[in-house]
Image 1: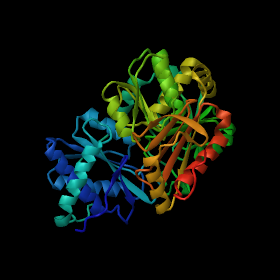
Image 2 (image 1 turned 90 degrees about the vertical axis):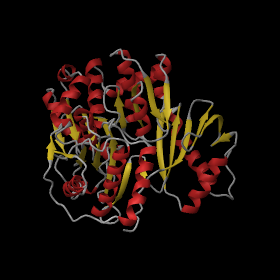
Image 3 (image 1 turned 45 degrees about the vertical axis):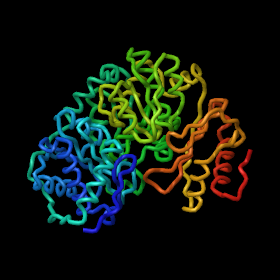
Image 4 (image 1 turned 90 degrees about the horizontal axis):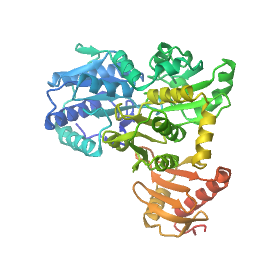
Length: 479
């Protein structure tokens, strides 16, 4: 068959359904993963097949599982659509060779995706996906697509109960049940329905669940617990007399939280709050890990407690790799967090539960806790802007960033540069700007953090003007 354009980005392969993500292409990728398992000595161990609630996902999973089984690969399939972190935990719990998770996470309804989760239950590292990609190219010229399999006759494994038992070892359910909180949960028509709210109900929390039913169009919205999607729900939160709203994305590995005032708490806020909680209240130790695009408030938590701060490129696979080797907690600004003792995969369910435990343990609300933390360690304000540029502009910008050597940017003096992933400029006042091309989308992402929150709107404008100048080779960079 013709070699398809299959690229593994920061978190797996994603494609448009019936365009590049097809039954045949998926079978080709599955065949390459089988060969990879054989090369690495795990071809005789079962491979777990998980899937989400998107269009025809259960049929895609059945087709893939049956195809691999016919090739001689031992396969087990999840008993029901299950969140990515649950499938990852299943790899550890059942001691499997790994898992293939069919999901496009928080992306639009017309996408589907495939994540390979190796034996250690975290995202595959680049050397693994590079080898799988090479195997795809080796197989493609002679690959014969299998007949369509719409059912799977092999073993199905339930994972909810083992996962819940594991969560009970990480979260103090007694503390949760004593909080007296009433929680609204927005499942966003995704995989968290029945998992996050199910665990909370078992812990004695009063839960109001919305958008729990399967909808392959996700209510004509993105299944992304972003501020834009959650903050407008604040009036509904008040109407239902709820204290807080939790949201998880399509595969429940990302999370977002708002309070009754509509204040948003994502990974940038939750990561330093939870790190502080684990160290000061749970007396745990270990490295604190964040992606390069994530708030430096975590750095201040590390410095205050004499802990090592580890910075990684964007992509939870890098964060997860450190969690496997001494990290206490790690995360990235896009909504992913995990902790020591859990799978090295981001988990929006666990992050939400730990945030509730933090509030229940301290007796304070999230706004109070975050304000106290910044008062102690220094204020921070953060914003991300995704710029859609014409290819010529994008090319000029990336070239300019590579060669950038100015002493100032957007009116601020530069203290240091970081080229771990894109170009990160750290200013003398402790603020910073990161500019990098997305690994999966035709955009350039601009991340901005300042130490004077009231100055963020003006500085954001200055940064965007400076970026625009860099994308135009004839422009002069503003001082």
